[in-house]
Image (cartoon, rainbow, N blue to C red; front, side):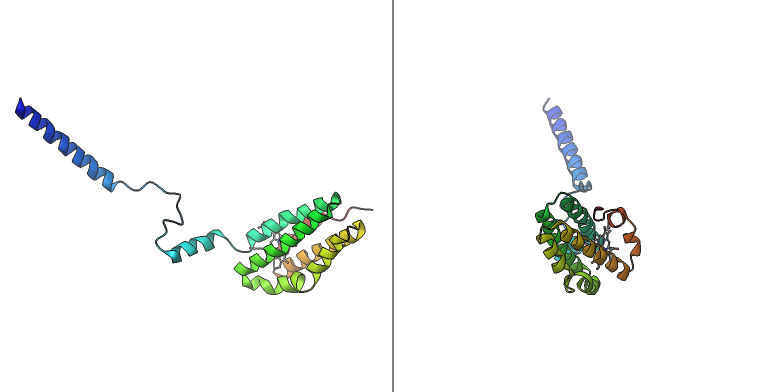
Amino acid sequence: MQRNYLVMAAVAVMTFGVGFAVAQNAPKPPSNDWLLEATDDTERFRRLQQYLRGFDQPMWEIGDRWRGIHDALMRDNFELAVYHWDKIKTTIENGYLKRPARRANSDKVLINSGVHAQVKTAFETRDRAKAWAGFTTARTACMECHDAEKVPFMNNQAMFRELNAPAK
Ligand code: HEC
């Protein structure tokens, strides 16, 4: 009887041991901690840099805000137009932080040329005709930069072709 217990105990210990070893060698389940689990800060920054993309993502946002400006002006919401226009400036500056080669044309066409300020003033007049004239000035600047940066195909889309000042 006692021997039986001993055999059972031995089998139990062996089973546990094998199970433990298998668990130890099992591959780790995938984790969501893509930054916390990076081997070091260099790898962490590399991942962040990759994730934050280049100039395309800020431009994507700018396109959306541009449609927002058109919509705002259609309903005489000049404050909203100014709001989006200011965010567009911030977004371009953040864009060339990541892609410094895009800075020269951004400055030339929009930021340093006074075009950004001029369009902002036009929206702030709350005068429909002046605000829409500002819209057209801004649109020209967007399209000029796409030409200068050798992505002229960007200009052949609804937000530039169809989103115009309404006919009087
Ligand atoms: C530096 C000059 C520059 C200015 C100023 C500029 N763009 Fe762009 N835009 C670019 C470049 C370069 C790309 C292509 C980015 C890429 O290839 O990564 C682009 C791409 C885009 C895209 C496509 C983004 C996507 O991936 O979906 C949109 C939309 C866009 N621009 C809208 C605008 C609007 C609206 C304005 C004006 C308010 C504007 N851009 C002003 C240079 C500019």
